[in-house]
Length: 591
Image (tube, rainbow, N blue to C red):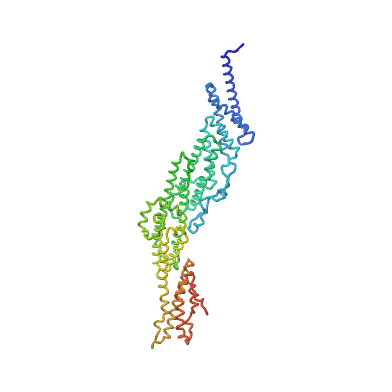
């Protein structure tokens, strides 16, 4: 007997319901096995893979059933209940995989960024570069998950997204990847310093934190962000919007956190010693931190935050140069430097400027950005010489600032020179400090370019002026003793007594000068040599001539060595004792 169409439909419906029931029961049994712990979550072996594939296959079939339009409301509720349990398990497994350490983890030694703290300018040339070393750049990707784990993450994520649980999937990824990224930064030497701790931190500690920060920002933008995006693209190959959203959310969080540190560091007390670390931070932020199209969704927001941080750093840098100028201008020390040596302030300022010029392009950009703020102060301090070199960038805010500092330093040295009661020592001090300044400028290509050739020529002219004044104050009276005028006695004959007095006068003056000026210190070997040569050229010919002309008048005198104590060669040897920073001794003469 043939069955009616109505009976056929009933049979099909009964069969469909039985199939649905079987699918639900199968998935429930699998869920129960996971809940009972019969399937290990930590094993990535073949058994776990097969079990997971069967589980995902069942989930896929149930997901398709949940979207069917022919199931009853009871079936729909039953399917959603078991699907929710399955998604809970998949989310748990996903979290477990994300929470495990990657295949290879960088060691603390390989990723240590901290440089030795630096408190004095004497050691600034040993400062490490804010860029990682070659060894660091070649280190293996810290997010190096195994292909098997990436495949598993992909399958679980695909199943969750297909079942409509993409929000839960993305939330798990966002939480654990953010946590993993934070741990990675800590491994690289960058801590999670609170702002209140940052303000109280001593400079030696903050200096190390800034060094770590500079290198971490660089590494994030050149290595870590790229690796993180590649990880997302491997797990979500067919979900570009999810990749973009996950990556943008993580990168935005990391960059904002790094910018918070920069702005916190800038809010600490500004002192001149912090300049170079702040310049490192500014250079770091001038680079492409946003990574272009990688962060389209938050690019404008991050660009604004980065510009805000840069503006605050510029403000701090400009203020530090202002503090340097104030310290030079307000330095009223009343005790002269012993022996006319180069003043410590001169050394400090010139070393400071020499090192600052290694950031020449950055500082030109900084002062261009803060030009309006700087112009008013600079116009009060100085006027740029109209005859300055054509090649000197007169419109460079940094060049104008350097000129201002040099003018203040010159005025400071001039004031300190007046503390010496001995005019010869005063001019020696001016010559010594002036030479040190010129040599520092000439020895630094960037500083020399900014100051210009005309500036160097004017300084050389000033040094020659100081040199002539020193010679006049020191040796003019000595040379007066060696003049033939005034030695005639009665009947226009040379007076033996007057010749004796002249030799005694020369000996006394020369010995006093030798005793005093042997302790004077010239730090520049070339200047020391030039001074000795010029003194020898001035004194020795005059002494040789006087000795040759008037020695005969004392040859019959008893104890002639009381008057003619030195041969010209002895004078030359003794002149070579001058400006060595030693106590003078007259024992070095020919016997």
